[in-house]
Each structure stands twice: as C-alpha cells, then as structure tokens.
Length: 382
Image 1 (cartoon, rainbow, N blue to C red):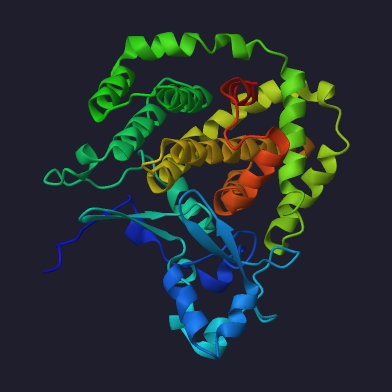
Image 2 (image 1 turned 45 degrees about the vertical axis):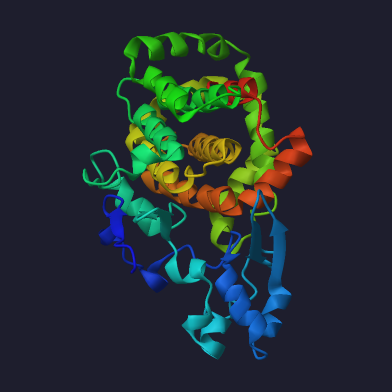
C-alpha cells in the first residue's frame, strides 16, 4: 500500500509560468545540468541514445555520484540547436529529457511522506515573482505534519530562516550570524538531537543574538580597501569562465572590463553611498536568500549544509559587487531593480547551479571547500 504523500509548496509556487521565447535567459546555458540516474540508464540501455553519453561527465561527490552534461566552451548545452531547440526533444521526444530539464525551475525535496516544492532563482520569471512579494517568503505549513520536528536538518534550516527573516538586523549580519551558527555546530563533536534543539533555541533569544552580533563589530573596522580588493579579485576569478556565455555576456562584459582597470582606493566613498542605496532591495535579496535556503539547505550532513549556505553567501557577495560596479559606471549613480534581478539570476546559475565547479575552485584557491569564518566575515562586512 502506497503512503499518502503530502505536498507543500513555497509561496507563489503556482504563479510560475514559463515565458518561453520572451525570456532573456535560456535554460540551456551557463550552468551544470544534472542527468538523473534513471535518465542516464535510459540513454545507456537504448542503442539509439548511447551517443548522448559522449556528452556526459561523471562526478564523484560526498557519498553520492553525479552525472552532468558537458558544456561547450561558451557554457552552452551541446544538445542545444542553432535554432534554440533541444536536439534530444526534437530527435527522441521529451520523455528522454533529464529530470532537471523537465522540471526546471521547479525543485522537489522529499522528506518521509512529505514533498516540498520550491522554485529556483536561476529563472528570471521566478525572481520577477519574488520581486513583487511584499511579505516574507515561506513554505506553506500543515500543523498535522511533524516531519520538521523529526529531522534535525530541517530544524537547522528552520533556524536559518528565522534568523534571516528577523527585523531590525542588517542582511549582512544575518548572513554572518547564520554562518557562525553552522560553524559552532561543526565544532561540537557530540551533537545529539536533544543538544541540537537546545543549541538552536539560543537563537530565539534577543539577548543572545545581540551578544553574538557584538562580536562582529571588529570586522566592520577592518581595512575596507583590502577586502574590497579581495572581493574584486574573487569576482574576476569566478566569472572568468562565464563572461562569454551568450545570456550573461551583455550584463558582464563592461563591468568585467572595469574590474581590471579600477583603482579600488578611489571609490571607497562611493561604496558607502552605494550600500545605503542597496538597502532598498533588502526585501528582494532576503526573500531570494530564504528561497535558496529552503530548497538547498536540506542535507543531514552538516558539512554539506555549510557548503550549501556558503554558496548562498558567495552568490550574495558577487551580486552585491556586480550591482556596485554597474552603479559606479552609471553616470547618474543609480541602481536599477532590473540590474539587481538580472544579477540574482546570473549568479544563481554561476554559483548555485555550478556548485561542483565552485567547490573545485575553492579547493584550488583556498585548499578547503569550507572557507574560514574570519575571511567570510571580513568580505561580507566591508
């Protein structure tokens, strides 16, 4: 007898509708497309489809293996035709598409007898929907279901969301507080479920949070120029392989060129002015961050949870820097909401949808896939 499955959806899930050829960001460029095992086996077992495997690479991950489509040098899926159509669908039918291609930007996470449905900010229409939300984003609840109470990873996720949605705390501080919470758990070798709940309860206390936030004040007094240079270098390194992706090119071309020519010392004053203007988009940024947490911070492996949240922080850093560069070269010194939305989509794809490549980059640059807390703190709080 099959279990009854309860389906819970993120706010505005049913509002999503693909705008097809009106979209400026094709789904087929700029990110690692996953091939699920079922689809991979379909291709392998059908002699007419075996040639598709020539365009699939194997990645050995944390306890699970992945199959990814090999992208062309310009970040385009090799199955995308010159007419903008999918050759797999054209030649064989959409039943042979991978689950990712069939479902994007919809994301499914299964927990016991509950299926959560969320949406990816890699899709511009999703970001557009979120940009019109005046209230905070959430997954609809069902009081008769206890699945969150039963799973430690979802209690952690719940705490992350609660922190990120607190009022009267800067978004940068909320990110740091969340990251610090995860690090503190990682340092605890004997974290039973009961201890976890007791630990997470600390973050419900205003006094506890105030004490934690006071610890970060020293980071705000660090050398702004030094860490702006660091963010700028990180920005250049990460977008190097993506700046010529067709759907990213226009948004990245001039700011990438500018990053190579700028004198950081000259625009520290502009940075402070920019940050004041950027606050106008805190609600959009916060809702996008929470949406990502709800869909990606679901692993019962704490290190994987930290890496997932670290990817969200990196996205935030790069979005903020890209919008700043756009603001700086704008004669009127204005921030366009369309620029903010476009960079959310672009870096959701570059970071969030290319996490394996980003992890390789971090290992190469920093010799660790989990960045030091002090380093992250200094980059966020400039």
